[in-house]
Amino acid sequence: MSEKQEYLEISVWRGDADGGNYQTFQVPQYESQTVLDVVSWIQQNADPTLTYRFACRVGMCGSCAMMVNGAPRWTCRTHVKKVLGKTRKVTIAPLRNLPVIKDLAADMAPFFDKWVKAGGRHQPSASRHEPIAQVKPDGKERSAANAGIECINCSVCYSACDTVSANPDYLGPAALQRAWTIVNDEKHANREGVLEAVSQGGGCHNCHSMGSCTFHCPNGLDPMGAIANLKRLTARNAFKRARDA
Image 1 (cartoon, rainbow, N blue to C red):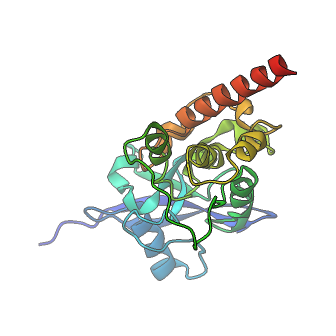
Image 2 (image 1 turned 180 degrees about the vertical axis):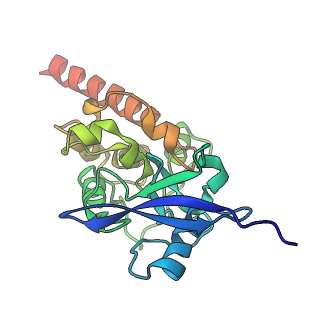
């Protein structure tokens, strides 16, 4: 005789930019079940109108990020048992600090707009017709740039950041970490321009160093450390300009 099927109580946010509320589903519990598995089961078996976003399912793209019991997570790599309390309840919502398109799908446009505003786009210092620049792989700048290169723009750190919640103009940890990577890229043509961009209102000096970005980063990166480095470098440049004026 098979064991009795156990069920999870899953509360899922339903709605759009104009508002919404939570809807509760009873979902069968299985071994090695991820939160993304739960969301997919609801869409496939209970309500086909549930909207959410995912792609790779193996922790490579970050598109399945959602709020799970109040914390931003990649749902494909979050096992239900990791977040399941004694109540056997799980609450799933769209990423915070971003507009909602529908249900669990957040609009990433503001996130990427700030990434660009912080100077995140690479500006080459040479054309394809010139010799390839030689960069020492063990150089200090190369090491600093490599420290944040694995960011995949999943927006988990952005959603974890209370400064973003309080200040809509704040560029956010992902954009600023990208800026620090660019500042240390010897092949970038306008590193001073990036420093100027992140020193303005909404830039690195708005960070309160709470560390939620680093704590929640699924790739183990340190956006708070990158922002601290930007603060030091931009402050040093400001003092230097004042001295030389």
